[in-house]
Structures are given as C-alpha cells and as structure tokens.
Image 1 (cartoon, rainbow, N blue to C red):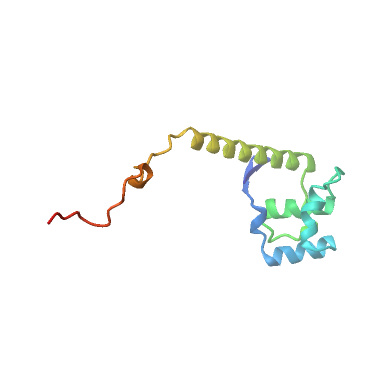
Image 2 (cartoon, one colour; image 1 turned 60 degrees about the horizontal axis):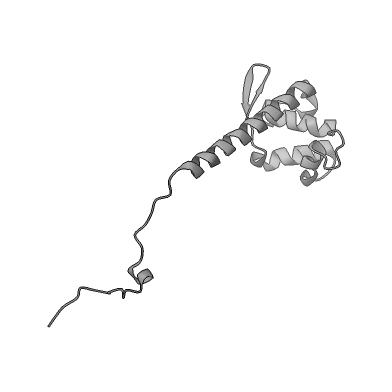
Length: 128
C-alpha cells in the first residue's frame, strides 16, 4: 500500500517483513513477532502499544533498515491518519475492481451437444 506522510510517499506491505526485521522487532518489543499486529491493532479496543507503533513507523519510514528502531520518531496522529487513508484507498480500489469485474459480460460457450440428448461423435461419420 502507498502511505503518504508529510509530503512523502512510502510503499509498505506488512507481508514483506524480512527475518532480520522480525528479529529486531521481537528484541525491541520483547515478544514474538506474531504479537506485533495485535499490539498495533488490539482486538479489545485499547489504544495501540507505542513500542509497536514505533516498529511500524520504522518499517514504513525507514524501510526497516539504516536507523535503529529506538531512534525512529514521527507524529503518531499524522502517521496513523496516513495509514488509515491508505487502507481506505486500497479498500475502495478493491471494491471498484470487483464492481468492474461484475459488470463485464460473461462470455458464453457453445453447449455440449450431449446436453440436448444428442450423441457426441468421437470422429468423422462415414457411411458405407
């Protein structure tokens, strides 16, 4: 997804986290990487964990490299708003693509002759 933050555009996909990035995130958070998403978007409705948000900002703004996670700083409100806008844009694009696909005519195919009770011939018919 494309995230626009303070005049810059960043491409980000959570599925692209490398093993080295995951290890750094685990060390920073003190928990397995599997808990990372839950700490960003808690299912119980609580606010996100700021250490997890810092990891997310590090991945987005620095590509998960070149800067230590703990040195990553950003406006939480502005970045979370930018992420929300990016998610909404992706959802709108997916919906538009689905609607476009549904609106296209479905090509028809010739019916199998056996569908009408006719026998299907395996080869040319020869008459003696």
